[in-house]
Image (cartoon, rainbow, N blue to C red; front, side):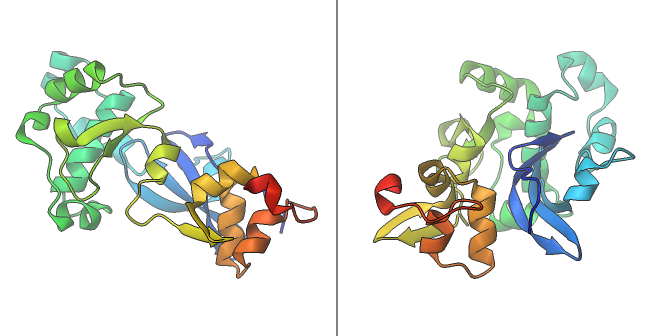
Length: 219
């Protein structure tokens, strides 16, 4: 089935991580919001012209979560860094958050210092924060605190995810992101093939619409 690969594309606050599957006649995508919330969204909801999906809902809730007084203090409500901070707190403290079970529900906390945005912002700037990076815990079972956090690209974080997909081929084990980089195939294509019963050899060696690569090319 032919489809437009939306991997790594941005729609409002959503970043598309990769293909998830099929819902009826629609392709669904694994997406992450700037605040850290993950969701499965249909391609139509992301790309339609009339009222597309632009966030997990945090865009509308920001003014409720942070008072106008605090915005006057730091002046960064609505920035990408503020969304990262807000999402981190919600994942660890709000039992109604979609991702709470994987964070606060597992006992992961945010250090007291970082409950204040200005302190978090100062740490971020001193550690070379950029808007194209995401916060990562070095120990995925550890807390959010200066000694356990750094900034990483989505690819780097994908290779460190607790539930990362590992694919074994020719006695070599690598993550989905690593195989994508080696073969030149998109992670979405490889993931789609594996989920639909392709062997690792076929998924990694057959280019889209072509014949198998030799292993020499991807070794």
